[in-house]
Length: 118
Length: 113
Image 1 (cartoon, one colour):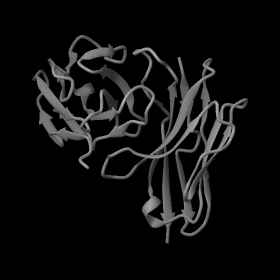
Image 2 (image 1 turned 120 degrees about the vertical axis):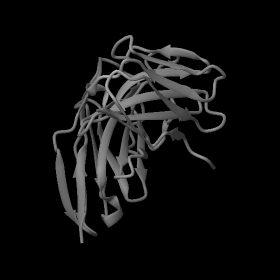
Image 3 (image 1 turned 60 degrees about the vertical axis):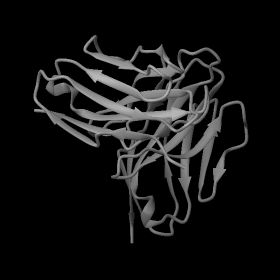
């Protein structure tokens, strides 16, 4: 079974500054995907960024980037130039890379509440 | 285009009652997932459909929970003899096929009195 741990229940950052959210995971799988999802008060989970474990290059999406350390099983999210609209819960998630039907679900961490202050 | 649609947005009912929660996935998405999110926690997997069949129902907590997807599109999550511990936000997600990113709906907040 996979586990995902987010050790920072809450974080805050001033707008325009940079913040890093931590995530570690435990798995015996070699091929898998990692995700960061954002959940504002509206409840909808919004995909922020995705990383394939077989890719050594860290994924980047505009102001969002990750630091993927496969050996350490670490997957942190860096938000640059933070904006008020980034205020939300952030969830790290793991998914096995499978070709058969079973096992295709996301396993989520407990979340980090990020507050961007003006 | 239209996203994942979940109805109702909120549902309040009494302990012991039966409830149905509906999910309408993104058109053309063959994979559909149900998750449950308790207050202050991350979502937990319940069940996953590939087409019409339940490919993995290992997350259903007990036999009071059941889900169907008869035509491979809309899915209904059914909870019998509801208990107060069933109170949570129930999230539905869909993806084009295996291994693709999942797109979530706004969820149904279920409150059992």
